[in-house]
Length: 93
Image (cartoon, rainbow, N blue to C red; front, top):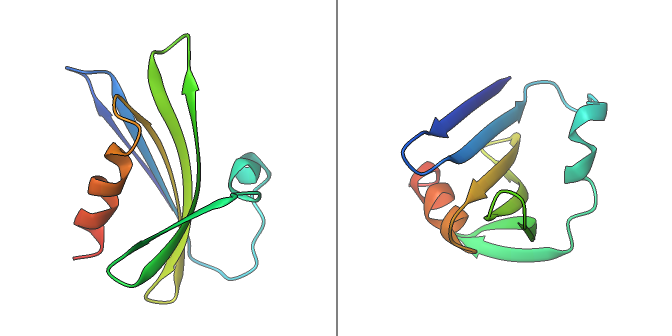
């Protein structure tokens, strides 16, 4: 399952992917397979990588975590380097 949110006034983008079936492989989500950093929000460990895109002038962050038995893979294009953390915090309330 996938959902995309585009914030037109500031050109930020959030793309949410949820694995509904365990061990199903999506080749187009391979960017989520080698996440090197970890961050914890409300006891949920989030693996992530963040880079700055010089063309978009936005931070690109790939995140992956398990919550309520589902695997979430969320891609962010945000103005701030850690703005994605606030968006995930809204999901995990």
